[in-house]
Amino acid sequence: MLVCCDDYMARAHLDQACLLATWRAGFSDYKCSRLSASLKDRCSLLEFCPSSKRAGPSAAHRDALVCWGMTRPLISILTPVLNRIDLLGGALDSVRRARGVPSEHLVIDGGSTDGTLSLLRSRPGIRLIEAPGTGIYDALNLGLRAAGGDIICQLNSDDLLPAGALEAVAEADAGAGRGADAVRGRAIFFADDAAQNASAATLSAEFPVPLRPRDVALGAPAINALFVRRRLYDRVGYFDPRFRLAADREWLLRAFAAGMRVHEICADVYCFRLHTGSLTINPGRSGSLAIRLEHLEISRRVFGSLDAPATLRRLCRRWFAKEAALLLYLAAIGRYEAGISRALRDTLAVSPQWPVDLPRELLAFAGRRLRRWMRLCPWRLESTSR
Image (cartoon, rainbow, N blue to C red; front, top):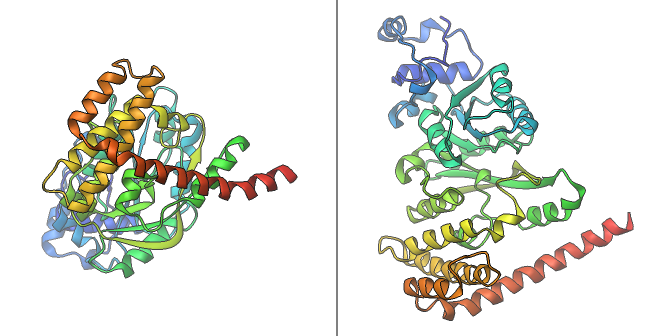
């Protein structure tokens, strides 16, 4: 019995989920001897639907992905993309290199006009979801709803999965136990331009291990190195698309508030590419007014919520102080049109004591900068001597 798994995802019955997992593992001809009589009857009546109406299986159905002899769960890789014809091919190839790991690659296109769609349609094994006008997190939410896997990976259209990444995650997931909500490996950073090699080396050296709430609020959490079990999304919810730039941080804070437990491994599982068009790692974003305002709103929500753990509320109060100071700086240099007095008045209305918290954050910032400078000195001396 040949199964076309690109067309029946809207019917997320338990037996169909098993068929999907088996096909993704590389068996296009499912052994009818293993099917119950009722399943054989249902398979002959499968209804097909267009891609826009697909829906992933429920939690109960996803639990069945392993029930027919599957030793590894399905990994769903989600890639939002918009006009990335120049770099997307590398991301697609990095997924195809994986061997022996059941996986599916869903690419959500936001309305590309540069040939990206033609490239995607020419690649076998890609599940393409066309969603013109969607932002990054709208696209990821669409992918989450359509994904059939029990483990979710986010792959940016300009980044790569290193060789062996999916294999390492699948092995770690098998040994992590039922208590873990996610597997997290190491992320490495590389640059297309030699002028950014120092930044790439710094980011790789500063990759936080283990991931802590303070890394989400005050550092660079690199969410793409986190392979999340589907049940955590079921418990925490999806991304909030109102935050167009920082919804990943907001989601991670919700996950930590819900008691997220992460199984850390030493393997390299993600490669971030540094380049001028990057939406993920862009030095200009640190000075962006939009990102400052989103960070202020997220931190305000958390430290003002009585439902959030006390430690998380204290952390986000510190985060608010840092972001308030940065907003004042942007106002002072003319990037915030409302002006310094408005910025000061608005931030004090939310947290009257943020100026008291600020010296601690300034000291912490100075310490981080000093450690970064000391780390980069040997690298720069070596580069100069070449």
